[in-house]
Length: 260
Image: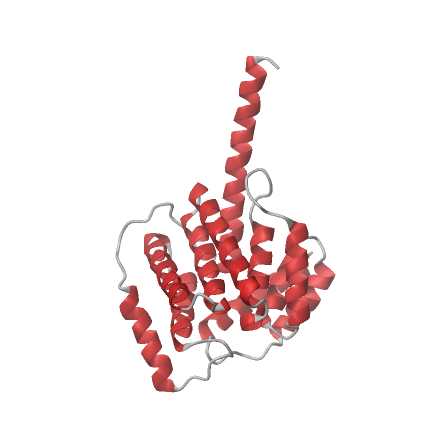
């Protein structure tokens, strides 16, 4: 192969890598954030007192006597509430800073109870959504860390928190680029997502993520069935913000299917 041909090959490979990473970060952001808001690539700007905010959410949950799902501790609930606010209502540097703090807090929970599958799963979620906010090559590094967190959760308890690690890892496999850039695989994604919805057929999240996967895979008819099932899921009293935006995402996807 001539020198010119080699240089051309490397140029094309670089361009394709950049495109794949860009598509990954956009795709991941639309799945987990679903707010269609602009993201910055740096981590500077305002500093958020996450501990104070998390403590406020924790005290609120305890004071209101909110009934938590099985496996959700008050500390995890506070993290979930804060994550929903950061994920759905913030943008730019403020969001990146907040996600960084959430990853640190999730790590603290894991260190406090290393055999808690729910904590490991939520560490993965915080890492995944942080990747979507940061973008660029750093996103792939965070995605790999999220994969490891989800896998650890699955080893401990694959059914924890309605299979959150199963459908989250499946979604990650679906969204990240494949080899040689990363570990993306629709085959693995379908295996995990179908397993999650089979094990937890009434969950809003398992049905939504499997429906989204099927839609992206060109199967609009089956996708619609799972999205409608997701829409019928009972509201979660302990996660009102997440429910609100998940239902918005369901309706948006159903509109796209109707237009096909």
